[in-house]
Length: 493
Image (cartoon, rainbow, N blue to C red):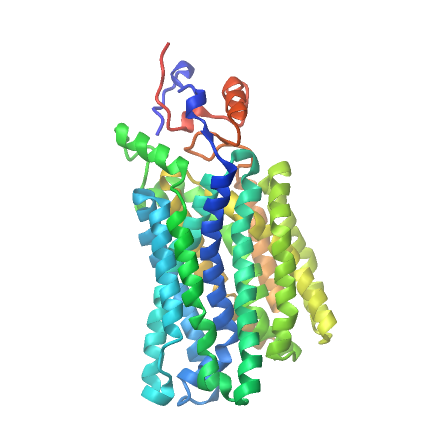
């Protein structure tokens, strides 16, 4: 990290060789190799969400009617409960040994666990014991996922040039929502084919295994891509500076363990938790909870829910790079404000329109609900990692993201449905999301704008050598450049 001094002359000087010039081809390779992991993670969410009723029959056939589905859905909840533990272990490990190595590990764990679910015996073979290996594999998935998104966002933000970080990083969440749509589509197509061949019980008898087993070829491709991605230049530079200098643990820019992350970065952690909670209550309502809501409260069939949801997710995914590019122009904070503001304005009308119950009305409502989600998720991968310094970014992201997702994101379906049952008001999911949108707006007041500036604890990242020379030439006058936070040695004349 930098050697701090109260004297302005002791601030390190930036030279052209210090600036990272990012080759666009390498950026594409790096981001493509990261996107496949998010695709796999959300592919599993899509499968498990749309197969929940079928899996209840397969794994809990000995339990009475309501309990079987609850026990199956508990597997989804368990994976979220394990996520913080995965983050607490894998996040600091990624700060110590590198982003690429940990991202390879999370990908291998996730793909293997998903595929193995497709090979499990059902309760017809071993009774209620069938649920135990299912829970164990969901725990493995949750543990690996605890490092996946934190690591992936850290990786893509560090690999992106400063001026276009919003655009490049937004592709990560394109993979997320296309993956969910692919999972839902895989279930719908498998259901249609197997039932036409083997009758109505085909999915319970064997069809449910097929979407999970698709993780084998998908996982091989994803692991291949993960092996090819390079380490981020920011990590390598910071790691080298850390090895060359003796840095005290009291320096907030130094690499910290979990205790140090909380002690030095608690404000940024709270901002991140609030923004992640706002993002994921809206996001999980649109994905994980919507099939249940459409079936139970609106009366749309499971297949109808998939038909309505998948096009909305695909269109929304296509807009994410455009919103990411917008955030590079106007800043992350205004885009977050648009997201939270549109959640407050659009969600109650969206849920009211949904109650009409016709497919056209449901699709209009889902598009309205997707607007705030699009503005939230398009900038998550560029805005959230920028809250933390490079040396501790993976670990701090893992803490903020996984605490928020476990407490608020993954519980959105449960709390939304419970609030409806408690109050009898089918608009309660909208009010639940709006509450967290309001918290997100409050967090924005304390958030520093990070668009177009170097990541905290990193040197500038640009696209051309000419840009590097321009950055160095204007370093004394550019308010976006603070060399005191960069891993540079003080060079005296």
